Length: 326
Image (tube, rainbow, N blue to C red; front, side, top):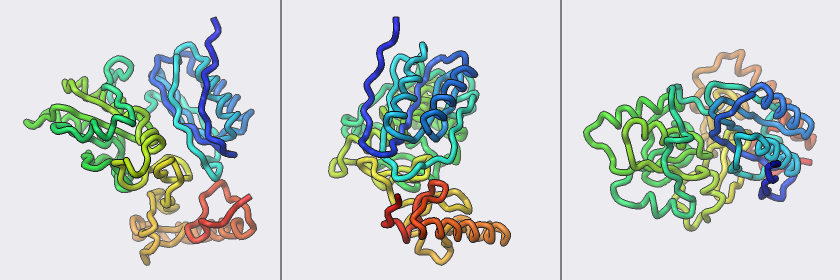
């Protein structure tokens, strides 16, 4: 029997960004990879998909109808019953190419025998999240990395101080071996995939009451108004928009070309910041040749913007952010 075509809600925008993941036991990965590349190339979709035996994870950008075709194709796989997608708008292409990679994990924890399909925590819907994380005796944990947390987090959330998701199991092991185990643990991440896998690991360690935010921060920012929100700051995203705020509007952060770390408006006021070259985080770590190459690149970007053109889909420099491009 043919699977029904799911209905997807898309924003009315020239460019739509779709962030998705789904844990499922996938087979024929090479065939699925080729099919995804073909449909994305034919429909001018750019971004990245990761495929593994444990599922699919990715973020792509393109026209809304083209995005629908890609999602419908994924939903046609026998192993995928349904898939949750976070949609947002974009003012630029955000990605430079389309990549579909086959990996051991769709989000790399580096631990064997983690089974989010059968042993993850309980979902908490965004509209119930504020009340849930406000209860006594609950440990709220941000499963993202340090540079992401520095841009924004939920009030009273614990930072495990990780530089990559591979570091999370070590933090969890220490918590498990401590003499002060929390009664309940709630976790969150950008789109839901890291916290879902993290809850599976916590369950494996023996924690019983483990929960995670369904759809992650992105779904929360989409559904919860700023006046009701317990989110503080902006949310880092892995594309050229760099950060999003409530309503999934583009934030003020940009990426430093020198170190690929997020740069705030305040960082840009520092004498150590040079647009397209360096920021306070990497100012003392770049060679003169790197600075020279970056300055020439930035010159070409500015010339393109002065002509009213996009340059490799890059976000506008801060001083030109109000400029409208074709």
